[in-house]
Structure formats: structure tokens, C-alpha cells
Amino acid sequence: MTDVSIDAGTGPIKVSGFEGMVRINAVESAANLSLTGSDLSVIIQKGAVNFTIPARSWHGLRAEIKHG
Image 1 (cartoon, rainbow, N blue to C red):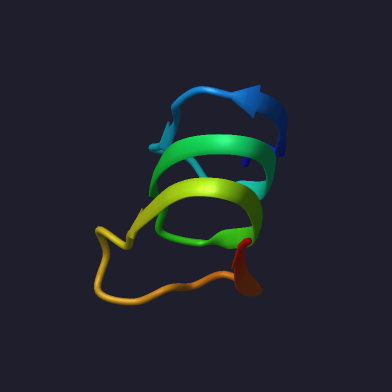
Image 2 (cartoon, rainbow, N blue to C red):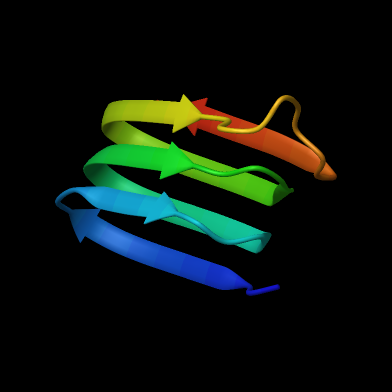
């Protein structure tokens, strides 16, 4: 288990291959997320979010993605 918090300005973000609490806050980004379970909170003001669940189901607490 790993907990990660990313506060970014602009630029791509790629997160994959681990479980734990993930919090991402970015002004402008192309975010690629491949996660099987955790507590996920993503806020991207401008850009794109690609979210993939490589397992059969999400086994985390919640996944909240806001695009603004």
C-alpha cells in the first residue's frame, strides 16, 4: 500500500501499478490512471483524464474525478 498526493501545474501525469490513497490536483494535464483499487480523488481544471481499471472490478473505497 502506498499513499500519493500530486499537486501539479501543467503537464502530463501517469499513475499505475499500486494501491493506496491517491489524490491528484492539477491546473492543466493529460492524466492517465490505471488503478485496481484505492481511495481516489482527482481534480483537473483543464485537459483530459483517462481512467482504466485493469482488474474485473474496483475494490476501493471510492473514486471521485472532477473535471472543470
